[in-house]
Picture 1 (tube, rainbow, N blue to C red):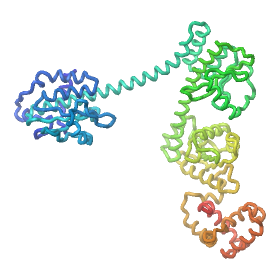
Picture 2 (picture 1 turned 90 degrees about the horizontal axis):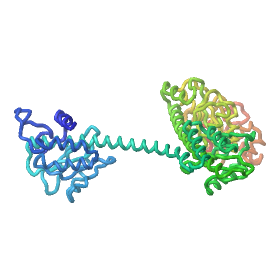
Picture 3 (picture 1 turned 120 degrees about the horizontal axis):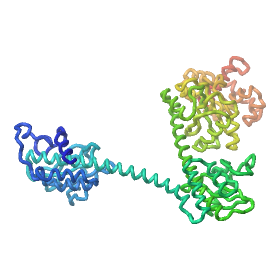
Picture 4 (picture 1 turned 135 degrees about the vertical axis):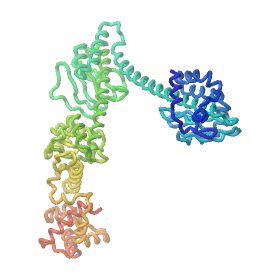
Length: 590
């Protein structure tokens, strides 16, 4: 094996390692030009094969470097001054570096990028930093000096030693990485196996305990899920068994007496109950239930409980409940991990769709999630004033969309949640469901026009944002707005550059805007609200929280300053359109 490596080294073409004498390290002009073989050192004739074997038999990188440094002096008038290994992207000096020598070349070596360069070593001559480049990349440097000019043969031997060292380091690094990967894989498998074996490791003396272990271990191995675990627990104890999620909603029930409908939990009381059970540890009796928390790694994922109104549960029942909770923790943790991975992949798909992506890739990825992009799509944007646009709210929006029969891909942005939905959403179903879920009606939803192919989704996203913005700026700011229903607002959306419209606003409202800016009045806002209320004095005054006489005065000032007659049909139309542009495109008073 070592001999094969040695022959491989001799066949390699000259590299850029540099040389101590003229020429490049590894070349042998005497051999190539005259055909004569120069005398080799003791290392070449006797020790080089053994050194090669020792280098490749060693799996410790520091030991490989040490061996190389120990044999540098055997190939010629050389001295190993310092050795460096690449660790986490940094050059780390070998412990063999002598005091005062390594520090003098540290900075030079650490700035190199795989090239051989001359270096200055105090008190030494002909110093050079030789790169240990192998198949695995740059592994380090060997710094040598020469007390006299070496011969070509000695130069060749040094090059051979450097290459052997670099190759051995590549093998050692590859072996170490393979070993680390194997250890990590073994650790993960062992961790899962350890959790499963806990079901059969306690109190095996008693037959009941053995039965608990066997039944639950079989459930865990079969991957039966929550219903299989509650079914096994009911079979072992005779009590109805149930699983609730973190918020007290029923997930599974096995046995008689299931309430229909299942009572809605009180969030505050449920949280207080969870905290109380967590403080006491182990199964805790609360009213007619024996409750055990499901919390792998300390995070509460749900509740496993037995219904025991007669307080008949004994120590064996508690034992079974504890071990079933452990098995359920594995199941819920696994489901949580799968859900997080799926959510991340869904978000990435939605991000790509909103930015524009390859259609073939989009179709394939959406099919993996059970979403049919071949159908007509709508982009829906949801913003709730009382809810941060975080993962929890994104999940709430996703649940609400599913509840109203709207298959969707969900993602979130900094202040809103985005859905790419199959088919046209119902007018107000999503809004009403979210209002119930959040407990507040202060939400706004914008829906785009229909989209027939994935490449149209980026534009539909902008339409949904425009519908959302129009709704937010309207008098009734909460609810659902469809882009198709915007009418004039479809051409007044934010984010577009309409210089002609800006000039139009300036022409009809410029004097009023300037007057408001100089005198801190609100004549343009008054005019806009007047049109929004259909010219009704009472409604306008009420919406502005002013007296009707004050409103009349402001309208008179508007006529005087602008020079436009509000009773003239053409002036009135142009002023109304101008106020719409001023509010939607220019952002109103801001």
